Image 1: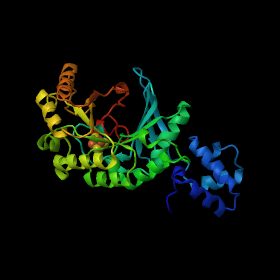
Image 2: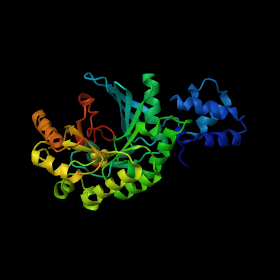
Image 3: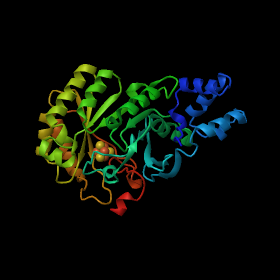
Image 4: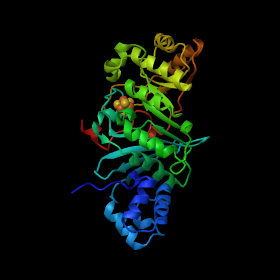
Length: 347
Ligand code: SF4
């Protein structure tokens, strides 16, 4: 038996073909698509469709795919974490954050991650599979429906390495950007990579105006290879020259994420090394006070160490901010997301 498709993996063109192939009038395609864009993904809730169409939808698509398994709300800042159960029982996490400028959604691109970063909960939970573009879209549409609020920004920074799921990522970005889809300006979307250099190069050639963020976390190869195995494949030299090329080709600024780990990468000397590494690049450095999660020996740098690191970078002329922490009490902060529930506790 072939597996049924997830309903959000159909484009508006696909819906025209689908209604025609079932002998339904063409305008029904627009009606179905309008429901989906509102985050209504169960056919029995599409109240203006006749029974024959909802039955055909139930028959052709997996209605059990993409169920909210759990929703947690932070008492500190109102951040919401959604756990979605997919059609094959894999589970993923999505984080909804409220900022002054509007709502930002941090979505996952894979169920789990293969990259094995030492400080990241997602890596500890193992890899399940790549997400489809529709499953990425669902992480924006369904929370928007639940909260009845608009999304102003999407960051592909949750579980998974987006460039390791390149084709589905590009299909999602097209849906997000399209006036018929999320209608979000490319500059309101950020993709984060741990440093898959060939895909970075391919991405800049597509010339999307999407923001690119690179997780750096160390300014020398020895330390970075210990923290991020991807560095053994693509060295800092390769990564930084791809970043320079990205800035030159796209004319866009690039962001480097740097999670400060207590006693590991957070000395003033580390800050100096980082400034030398990024010298001359139109870059922004985003410091993150690393978040802890059960099962890891890493701990976050004390505030005074974070301040000293930041001051040193500023003194050296770097453009730097410290990222505001969101949802740490519900394990929704950076590095705390994981695939499913319980995998860490089992280890
Ligand atoms: S930090 Fe990102 S790339 Fe590294 S293991 Fe975690 S999810 Fe994967």
